Length: 333
Ligand code: PHE
Image (cartoon, rainbow, N blue to C red; front, side, top):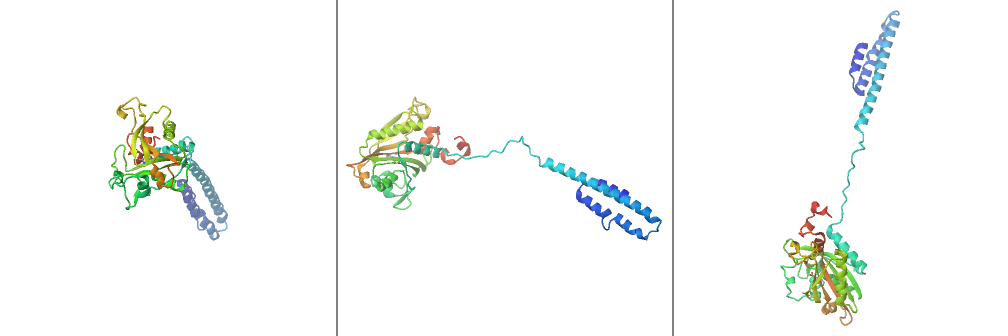
């Protein structure tokens, strides 16, 4: 029994097997136990001798099992320590944190520049009435921009605003002058997509109404904002233009961002960027439409193409990049 027990114990490699063996030899029905129980059938002379041997064997097996048990436990502990080891030299996992889209940065920057000049920031809806988007802004019945091929109509009277100028109407109807507001948001036109056009784009509208507001105030405001956004060395050019809701009206270009006005391939050698805003003195009819007396008050308004400003500022040559949300593009800002 002793030999076979020690032999079997030697082969054991885990605690469960070891327990099985303990039961097999030392348990209630175990082999040694059986021997000890059988003692009562032995003669008086045999009993002490066999008893001594059996007890010795039991002790040896017990000791052996106990020893192996400790060994196995120690081994398992070591294995666990190795398995659960933490490599403190491993580089940490980087958390990827999002950041502002370049368009949003530009809009926030614009809002800040104008807030510092005393303007309030307001918001208008993307779904507008035809009245606010066209009629109240003095747009003639037959103006081409009203065309189905230029404007997304929802019903005969409701459309996706084609510019942020209807916000002017909403504000002038609600707030008595003097007023100074800006408003940024999405605008929609039935345009085919190309490098500089998209059916959805962004505008930034400004409106000032007070007594004695002149074209000089308008030009000063535009100059200040261009310098704040693009830097001191940016040149500004006003070109006469026509808008139904301003008179006189102008379009504004800034010097080409690449060559700073010297002339380069990006600006076809002209030194000027594409136009970035339309502006003018609010038309007396528009003031009247909103219940403001043009004999007492005057004002100016401007509308910026936010996408174009972002393109000029960051040297982006394709408007699509702003809306595709390709991470390789966005991560550069
Ligand atoms: N709404 C005009 C446009 O979309 C821009 C503009 C705004 C012009 C305000 C004059 C005054 O082109």
